[in-house]
Image (cartoon, rainbow, N blue to C red; front, side, top):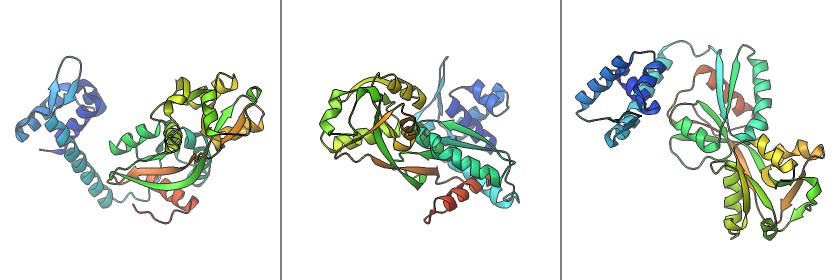
Amino acid sequence: MDFKQIEAFISVARLKSFSKAANSIYLSQPTISSHISSLEKELSVQLFDRNSKEVNLTPAGRCFLDYALDIINIRNNAITNLCDFNNTICGTLNISASTTPCNTIVPGLINMFSQKYPEITFNINEKSSGEIIEDIIDLECEIGLVGNVGKNDKIKNYCLVEDDLVLISNPSMNIPEEINLEDLSDYKFIMREKNSATRKTFEEGIAAKDFPLNKVNVICEVNNLDTLIQFVKTGTGVAIVSKDVGLDYVQAGKLKMTKIKGLDLKRYIYLVINSKRTLTPTARAFFKFCVKEFNINDFSL
């Protein structure tokens, strides 16, 4: 068993295709197939179920994937610690952020960080919190900014800021600045997708008050904040968003913000990393920058 075989296995497992895996790690498809066959022979197990459309992990393959990721990560840690490149902060920093932090704190952070490291370029990827957590676990992403973290020992999370959710509407709807929980059933809702941290916080909040979810009249689901706001601006329905996200629109007179009496929609924005991953120097520099900016005391790398 060697690292090339393990890397080939991980690539096929992720992409569910020998040809795509070959392209991703710059090998030929026969070479990929040979690596997998040799690995299966050595382990005396079948790692993949192969069919004409895609390749899927067998139960044994799923079990081996965790070990394979650990092996590659340990190798990378060894290389990182042995090679003298820790002070080289350059290249592209990839950051995944859920909708709220992507539209509130990320632009300011990037602006300040780029002033300190002007040679760095940035790739900002907006996804739902759930998708980002999965990417962090699968080592597809180094640093994420999310509104919900859940519980997973493969993730380290650091609280950055507090965030309040509010109801927004078109001013012509004349919704009061404060309404009762029971009044929610009077409105049509434009809702974020189910993997959204904003939606999860809202649903958990009303459930805690014994308000049935089926009384929330969801007429449309969207996976994009701008689209959601456009629906609300036209008066199609109301929506739940971060107070910071809606503030500019409220000040411009395009939206109205409403609080819901007795409903705590407070949550937090977190920075997340993989607990077993050694960050690249550039990602580590950004992490330390966030630690200083948000006064994080309990942290480790």
